[in-house]
Image 1 (cartoon, rainbow, N blue to C red):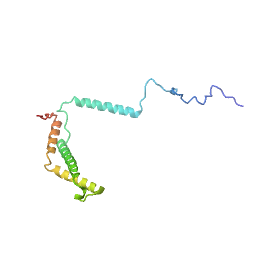
Image 2: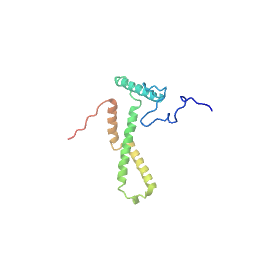
Image 3: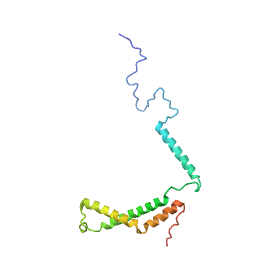
Image 4: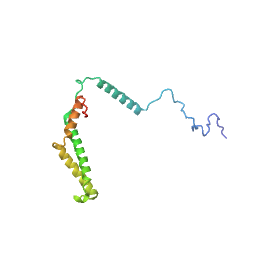
Length: 155
């Protein structure tokens, strides 16, 4: 019979951590936490973004180039906002009309009615609209230029 050195034999539960006790690997160095590569990349990206924002904050307005097509983007945004408002307004008004009036009943009727109202709202906002588009456009252009709008007068 072969004899086994008792120093080489480990008890069966030696590798299982006990409750309240964490298991440490022999080569594990706990003095300095090691970040995984992805976390390190995120940390570097955050640092670069913060540095870029700090540099951008210290630039003068003459150094900052305005975004391209700002006026066109503002026109589209203000027109879309007015169309959304008109659409919501018309949908609320349409609720007061009985379903049997225009023959739009059921789920298909609701879908058709919503598409119909959205189309009306887009057509209204393409033209003169209800005036909301001009107010939004003026405020956004002033905000883009760095001009603080005057607070409304309350009388």
